[in-house]
Image 1: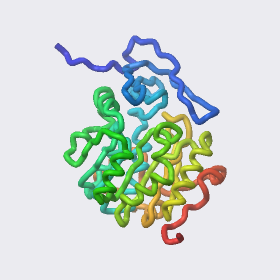
Image 2: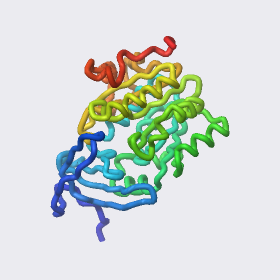
Image 3: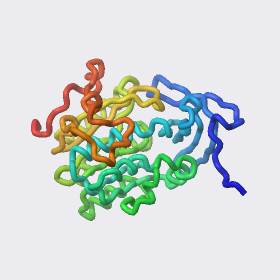
Amino acid sequence: MSAKRDVPAHESGIAPSPCTAPLGQWASYAFVARPVFATTSAHQHIEVVDLPAFGALGRAYRLDGRFMASLADAHICHECMVHPLLLAHGSAARVLILGGGDGGSAREALRHASVREVVVAELDAQVPATVLQHMPALADGAFDDPRTTLVIGDARDLVDAALAQGERFDAVIFDLTEADGDAATLHDAAFFVKVRTLLGSRGGIALQLGAPWFEGDQVRGMLDALRSVFACVQPMTTYVPLYGTQWALAFASDSLDVRDNTPDTLPDALQPLRHYSPSRHAALFDIAPELTSVLGGAPAHPATR
């Protein structure tokens, strides 16, 4: 008897149909999609679909009607959030990932030889279960690595418990759903203050801000909150095909200058990266003039505060 497998879009007999997702308050976009799997957990509706537009790597998952990641381009955000921060730190040993149930950010953090522990705080156990069943290449074994601990529960509770125990992390990666929903209180100044307290002396955080063209108020609000807490806040932008637009991310720290810490070369473990590279580092942080009203101008160096 042959093993059961998911049939990719180009082999499936299921008729494709438009799959629409919101892009801010006033816009939306769509992909033609073939359904693969759907379920509703205690927290959200989870779907796995095949997107013919992306070809053989077109499998993607959605949470509550929003695209989260595809096999074709999930590496873009994960590489951009993780590697500039960890390379700037240079010796990060403990990494906390808030959200991150698909394992992509953990996979990238584990590429760094200095990392000895990655804690993934995922609210919904059904997310890693679904992704590991239908899209295992996203995690690529990250949850099987002995350095990884997957904690199922609210990230707020984990952060509070870690603070009570006096724990410290070198990097905190916010790999969460967008800030206009249930994750809103994980993107405000009060929560950033808590996370700042968790950081070691050279620690920093990385997070996604959203679409600066279509979610300007949300992006600007998060940056204002970050700047009220951290000495140095440095945004970057890159295009994410699955999200349908240019996407903004940011790094925040009291001591790390991620933007101006450009590596000359990447270590061997990072050579397989597909998006981030030393030659593209400066361009990622080069904010276009038409976006400075949302993202700000040249980011401040930590010493200027």
